[in-house]
Length: 252
Length: 233
Image 1 (cartoon, each protein chain N blue to C red):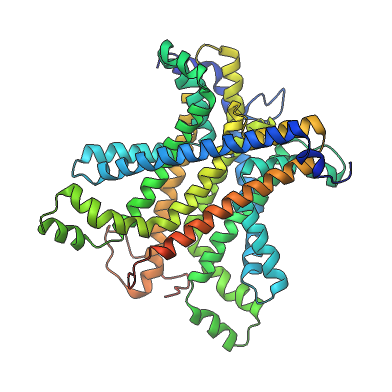
Image 2 (tube, chains in turn blue, red):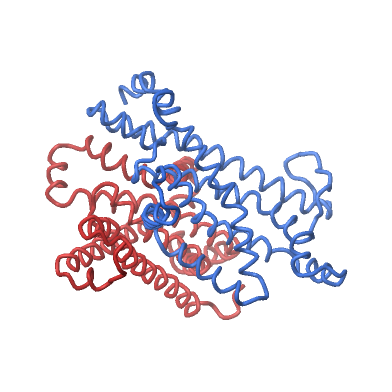
């Protein structure tokens, strides 16, 4: 265990921002930026994919289903290799490792997130859709004005867990030399050479702290949303929280 | 870019051998770590269900660590870190017996055990407590009630989640490439850099991964259909 704090004291800047002022941004800030950008850009794609998979038109349903199954059946590393090879060919110039990783995450997370969104849409009571259609909304109008706002709100905890997976997946950028936290740790390890356990222990603990706190946040959010959804039924609250005001449409 | 020519890769003996070796390694890692993960998961589950709170805390910590730390980082910690702390005799033995493969089986197995045990625990929790009480009242020991009454039902309930996590375990076997195991992804990357036929090489690997994943998913679906209990909720 000796040396953990020495390594932290000597290398905290590298772990935090990489070689930033003199080189590209790296370290944990690059990890977080990469995962936030990834999930934010994947979100619209995932909603479109989910809508396509649930749409009444076969021409939309089939390609979306195939895409989701292919992405779910292939390792992320394979997707990275494809993007690394295809994107420069398609746009005709070299792209950085960061961009490659971002494109990969958008595709990969888009597919996984679309399953989350789809589950959220299907979990809504059928009556919501029927009522909206009876009131004269089109299929798309029903989705946009009635289904999506409720489904996406209920899906917030799952999306947060997907964000945590994204953070964990950014580590694979190491394979194509993206400057992020894992890369920084390997740099430190290559400088020190004698303390591999301590370096990778620090790396694991850093990820643990970030992901564990986000997991707790997701659990809290899940409880809160469960309260809100059941708010209309006025169930007795167990942990002494003030009853949340039913401002958001309760689907039950 | 050259024309798309799959045969240029498949028919060349050295590439064919690399691919086969890659598939063999991938299967070795996937199956080895699956067996390890399942064994540990069952142990973890049983330990967590004992009344001891300390044991429960330890298992919860184990699960939390393995779910919140990226799998690649766990792999690196094992390969670069823990390996260096092992006694010299063990290090030597490992180096002679494919240390990379063994350590990736260990790392992936330990990691996935956390997911498997959580899947089975939520399967178990969906069974009413009355069943455990009834089987204990009928004279089963704790182990016996687990073995004959609770686990058979819990595993059935847990099958969909277990199948999903088995697929991700299979996919995670590609991470072993980062520590230098010559599995499928590593093999196609190698072929790509020797033949400059990225498109063909990646297609071969993608199709192989896809076939194996779909087979796992199909087996899971068949299993849960075959062993579903008539009238069960």
